[in-house]
Image 1 (cartoon, rainbow, N blue to C red):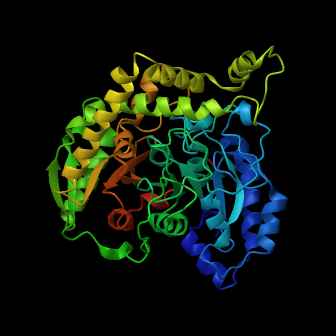
Image 2 (tube, rainbow, N blue to C red):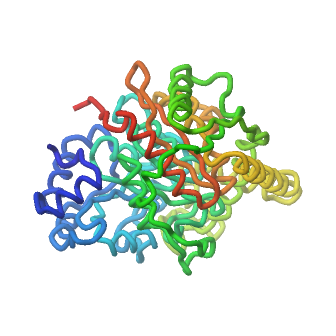
Image 3 (cartoon, rainbow, N blue to C red):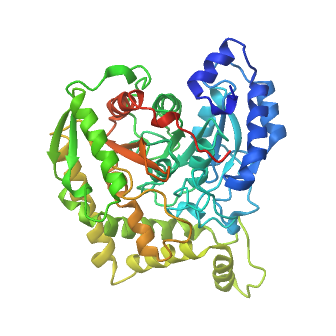
Length: 479
């Protein structure tokens, strides 16, 4: 069997039995990447010599000893570039490790390469990378989702055993759905954001993209935990998420929100999700009708809060302290202006301008302050819903992956995240896993949502469904 097709769990067993070595695994992946990635463009950078150096010293007795992981290019790794897929940071080298990277290194993971993304994580298609778009492994004419599209694509194409991404409004779950893999967005504060370049600080969260739910649980074990370096990290216990995977779903209350089954949804997506609902009901779970009444406001609230925070966060990229500086500046203000005009792409500029506007004098109360009030209503909706149910079941996206260039206006692109955004606003946890395929062999994603720090039950509910179906075992047919 080709090693690159295996899961973390399967490879750990092979490594422990000494059937293979970490170097053999890395070489297998590098050969796969050389053959496939020119078509996918999932990676921005690879360092084969360094990956083999890590493999040579990997301690296979550790939980991830010898397992190669891809890293989204907005998560800092000491001595490596961290471009955020932007020309502005094209030549930046990180002087430190993100907390999640320290944790991966501590358990023996091999950092394989830097995955492509939408610039500064602002996008839903990975078309907004300054270094070229990533293609969906299931159909090269289609997008892989975003902003963690590179991370999802390399996992789906078997160019990495697993990957890390970031999720601000669905940027792990939506690409996982489009690429047919598993994507987990942890509760806000479960995983340290230290070392992840900030887009919207009250929404961002790092999480895993994997081939199976069990692999996602294992990675969550490793990257979770309180971090005194990060002031939104929460000091809550970290259970062993792998230990409760087989808890089953008998008696599980599954909430079905009417607001997530809307007119205009793709018929094949709707049919696949309804089939998943029927499976849960037939296997011991109770389906509960619930309402999340403020869902209709989620898109508006998100694109006020997220852009306002982006405007504040990206103000640091001025060409003085780090990053590219325009050589054409005549004074400080002119240099700032030209540096950003030349360094930022169109979508980043659009969001910074919008965020600056909603924070400006005379508009702060009308937009940003009001959006924060509605965000509290969204949080309350989920709190009330979880009094009636244990997990919530929805589609991850209203459609399968769309064609590159198909959503040329920003609003239609923003609406692609309609089912994922509220999870970030409410700071709860969510997972996307495959639940079927269209007639054109495009993956369909099922989203399960859990309450604050409810990842254990969420993962068990997802694992039960995955074990009963073959969707996760299906691979793209391009090769």
